[in-house]
Length: 189
Image (tube, rainbow, N blue to C red):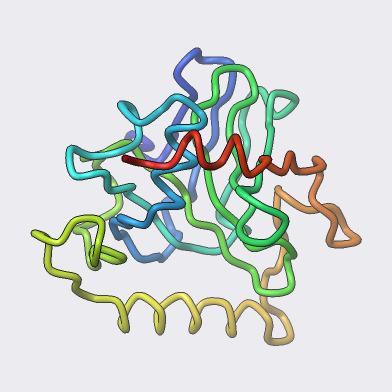
């Protein structure tokens, strides 16, 4: 059986895998922040669908593994607060989003549009004002699903490991925080 959950950055210097056994929610997010991050990293073509949506697989960080090129890993924040947006520092390929601390274990793996191996898309989120012609669906189920996984991971015996944070709960790389100018320049039209 081939591992259809192994990915690489555009230039090929990084490879990562999401465990075959990993349960998660496959969704498409149309929010301005996902579009801004992809545009800032110059990957609106490789990571946004034709409507500006980002395919994401929400799961636990314990199911995420770097296979090659971890020394190229980089992270940014669109402002002083908000998600950590992990990407390949070599070529800018978006990899995943995490919360700023591992207290609530969560990873939203950024997938190429139309990728196989993650089951059907279960939710279309943040469409209002961004993709009005697309009906938002599955939002509550997606939230409940990820919260259930997070709570199980936080129980005694749950797996809270993360390749993105050290044992003290600090990101393994200091995030670059975009200036308001950089962020605004990358915002979608």
